[in-house]
Image (cartoon, rainbow, N blue to C red; front, side, top):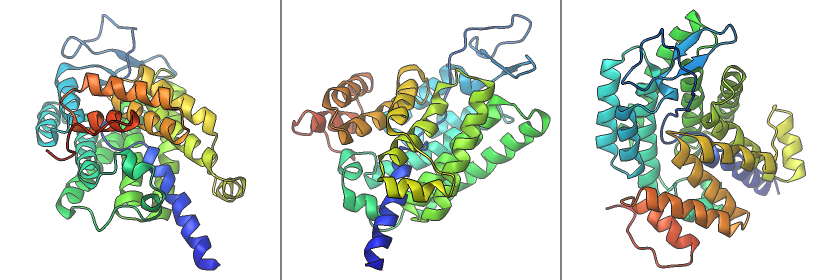
Length: 322
């Protein structure tokens, strides 16, 4: 009886991470207010605001061409090429945590791809949810991932010492905590530590949204936790509430939808997460629409083409690992 309870507890600990923010990459939100007295970067910088009204140039919230091309490569599973774009940008902007967190995301996204995590085969399989990946992750890739997280946090915390409401820093810390939570839960299988990091990611996301309400990509962290925790049994939600973990399934899908509709760099990731949630909820039209859009936008991606075919009950048109 005790062994069965432990198995169920491990299963419920594993679920939240599938939706948490991680994988892939940093985000940018479109902000239409500009300040003509401040310099622009690459002709496209938009302004983020503190409560005091001071403007901050934040590349994480601007569709810069160099970063856009890097994320385009990431979402078509061209990981080394995407990393090169991010690394080159970071060399030119050494004080920005955005480049480092994007590099970290590229390593985690690649490992998830190689392990088959970003698929409905993994996501909808309870046994895989229970135990995580088979075997261990690539040690070299994970070491590079962890190193990029260390550099991200060092840069972000330095900025926060100068301005406690620095939106760039808060967003980088949100993603760093979310991605490390993903790695701990699914790849390393360190479930308790993963839950602590998931809570930390949500805290950073709330801090960011309190300063910048249009940072819609931050809703991935909030929406994922709300949806999954809200999906658990009443008894399990009661148990998690003692640790300060709460959830609302309907609200969670709405929050994921904000990122899927209005995000920028993380919009495709939000779409695949929402699509997988829709498949769990048997909301087939929503899942099919999102996956069709992804397969059309990233036509060279075997991942999105395969998941769209599965959602339609069709033969998979491409192998996962070209």
